[in-house]
Image (cartoon, rainbow, N blue to C red; front, side, top):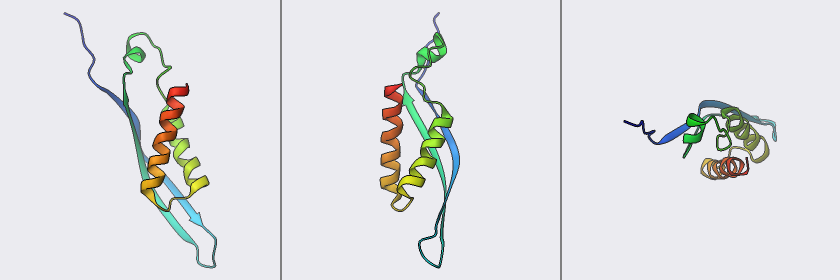
Length: 94
C-alpha cells in the first residue's frame, strides 16, 4: 500500500509589521499582524528533498516588511494583493 500525500500548504503566521508615519507633527502608527499561506504541489520537497518550489518563510516575512516600507500600509486589500503577487512571482522564479 502506497502512501499518498494530501494537499500541501505552508506559510508564516503572525508576522508583526509596524509602520510609523512621521509626515506631520502628529505621528501615525500602524500595527498589523500579517500571515501568509502558500498552497501548491510541494510533494518533491518531501519525497526527494527538491526545495525548488518552496519559498522560505523568512523570505515571505521579509517581503511583508519590504512592502510596508516601500508602499505603506494604507489600503490593506491592495497591499495584500501586491504582496501575494510578489510571493507567487518569487516562488515561480526560484
